[in-house]
Length: 283
Image (cartoon, one colour):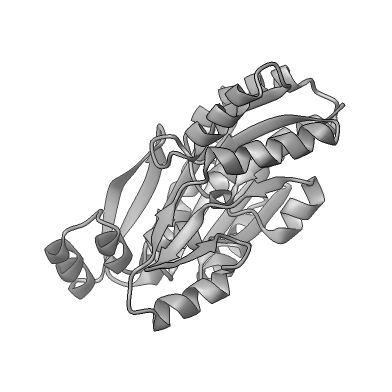
């Protein structure tokens, strides 16, 4: 039996990485009023930006349902696969709970689920590691044990360009957003134990904030696992390429990739967001 790795669309894996590792991706949904789109399927990053510019309503996001997972899991099992799933932090979405409910419905089936306690490529890096293990014929139970142990070592941080999306998504007050935008405040958001926190705020140019993000990631290079680092962005190719180039010049990892945030993650952070995601070495 081969092991199929499954994740959800908030992992922000690039099409190339999805294809290379044969990963199945379950879409979350994005709602523009009565219009409902599947993240990454009928709403690409470019189409999302176009909708944001033209729609009179702000996008809202929805979790993947147990029925969606059940349908996928049954198909993969019928094809002879064992299944490993990791997805968005259970503190940020009900999607992981949906996957667990579907697995419980198929009681006794070879399905393992691990809460990433993360988002974006913080999930994607775990899914890639799981796929690499599966390719080496690591048993399903051991993959689940190893990935579960990794979740606390994933480091995810990103800089937000505008506070408008955080405000419209209910994470900031209107006054905070207005004052922050006027003063050119760029928060650095970090994922800690499955939740988002704001450890720093910068006043000034986006370039200055990007420089601090790079500094955050490289404060202790000896702790960085040298396999995968991701630079993930929402419509900010320039910042992403600049940061990725700097990381490659430092030769911090064998694989330094850039990926684009999907519609769900972009709904909460907005265009101009850029982040760095890496795995710390096991102490």
